[in-house]
Amino acid sequence: MAAASGAASNAAASTNLLELNDIEAGYGRAALVLRGLTVQVPPATVVCLVGPNGAGKSTVLKVASGMLAPRSGSILVDGVDVTGTNSQRMLKHGLAHVLQGHSVFREMTVAENVLLGAFTVKDQKVIDERVAFVQNLFPIVGERWKQLAGLLSGGQQKQVEFARSLMVSPKVVLLDEPSMGLDPKTTAKVFEQVARMRDAGTAVLLVEQNARRALETADIGCVLDLGRVHISGPAPELLADPTLGELYLGGRPAS
Ligand SMILES: Nc1ncnc2c1ncn2[C@@H]1O[C@H](COP(=O)(O)OP(=O)(O)OP(=O)(O)O)[C@@H](O)[C@H]1O
Image (cartoon, rainbow, N blue to C red; front, side, top):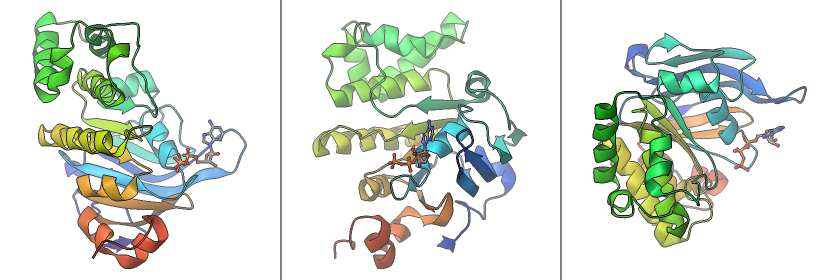
């Protein structure tokens, strides 16, 4: 476990799909929220950001997706410097952001919701291949394809959001609190789906309040505090650390 360093800091630069290097960022004239934050996301890996309320976890995702321009530092996607790129172009570079809360359009069908994610894709054959891919990954999406999304449960709607994000064939999916508002059983299923995305080859940068549960799915954990990565390392090591458990994960690990 590394103190005050980025995730997977031993990985060579070229092996990371996303790198946020020494990022400083904040809102308007208010004080900085991120103060020299470094996070690295290798391929087919779930990296999870945990930390206290207000630590800046969602802000990291906003910077990564181009919603919020950093004041300093650099953002690399698959080795290409994309610092200062807006959110629409970030999508083209391969970063898909699944926002906090529910973002399905309830009055539209599951199909319409998912296909919205492919609005930049012109080739129908590619769209068809991706639809088959997401329907295979999230069977409920295929089963309820023609139904109104508003008729699905919260956990099923989350799968529609995941499917929509995968329609651009992203290099990295940014997931902001995917378990928000879901009961424990549904939360467990949502994390299973996150693992399935990773196993299908997509890298994930995940922000979660439900830190212990998220770290059980993640490969790498980063503890944020005071706007930078305080500690990072393999998620099982973070989970097993009694001090971290007390400070950041809501208690000691179960013995
Ligand atoms: N749109 C905004 N405008 C101004 N300040 C903001 C905005 N969004 C967040 N902040 C501030 O930035 C800081 C970090 O917020 P952020 O949402 O990134 O934290 P977080 O770690 O995700 O918190 P939580 O776990 O409570 O969701 C907080 O002090 C918050 O008030």
